[in-house]
Picture 1 (cartoon, one colour):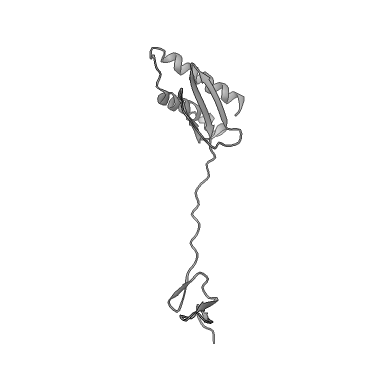
Picture 2 (tube, helix red, strand yellow):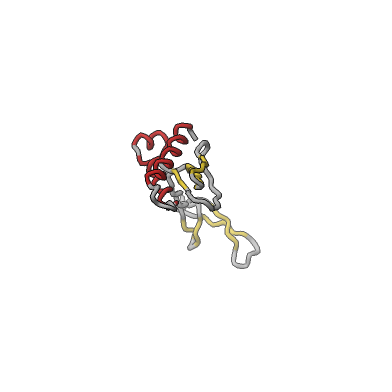
Length: 135
């Protein structure tokens, strides 16, 4: 993770804890949410670091995460630990379904091609043509 972002994350966490020092036990969930908003909420950060950042805050937790290359930092402030990591976001593209043809009531995945089908007695294959016949 870039050093400037690490410093910003640490300073933002320290500022949040100092501003809420009247709380004996800070709310880790609220702190994680605020830290994420600080890091990805600014317009300049969106362009520089992207949107898919995640933050966990607490004293005792387990995690197993996958992060983008160079997109992970783990730090502690006042006995609270913070793994902060970025995931890679890719648009989901639905694959096109295969084109289906009909072979005498049977479905074939390749229309207009010759397909070998087994006879009901399964002794010999028979050739069947799918698609239009040419004279």
